[in-house]
Image (cartoon, rainbow, N blue to C red; front, side, top):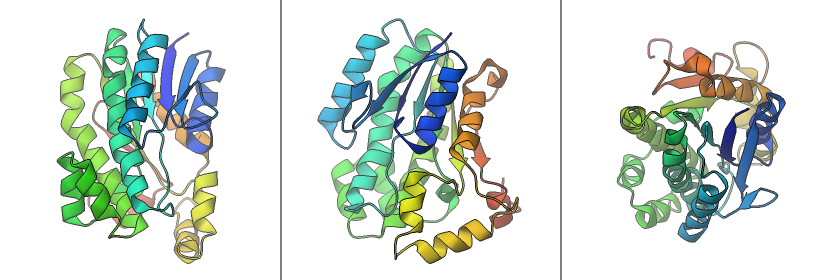
Length: 253
């Protein structure tokens, strides 16, 4: 039995990951804004510090894995909230769990997005990569929700790639999954919103395998990357998207 922790385990992909780990016989500590083992608001510095301090207490013996899954969708306002939770909250939680995972030579998985491969406002992405939260949040509020969301996932995935070798030397494998269209409550909110409904319907209809993904599909990929079977996989971005990325970028990999 392993010891795992994660952010965002209340619903959707996070809940499916938590349930799969439980089914496999592992213990899971969930960090979320409500209905969690550790309740914390990852949009604030104080909330992040509280989450990390509490995790250090309950997992002092070490973690076999950590999943950074907490996030909000592109339809959430203000758009600066997307930035603070999805990017800065994710990195703070990963850094807070790093030494605990290193104790057990475990693995880290970040939940990114298929949308991370697209082009976004370069100034916004640069502010994220430079760690300038105040400026990046201010910039997000002048943009649109998809830019705030996708640009954040782009910067987060780049962060993973830049830091995976450093983490590997500590005994921590770090990878990311990039979900495509997945039937989650968060996705349903976007798919039924006036702003995104048409685009989401077209996206769903275009999936090469002919059907939308489920949270369980994303959980299966995540748990594989966490497992010993993936011991030689480090710094990769696993697209779990029914072929959408290959359809969009057939010559890039």
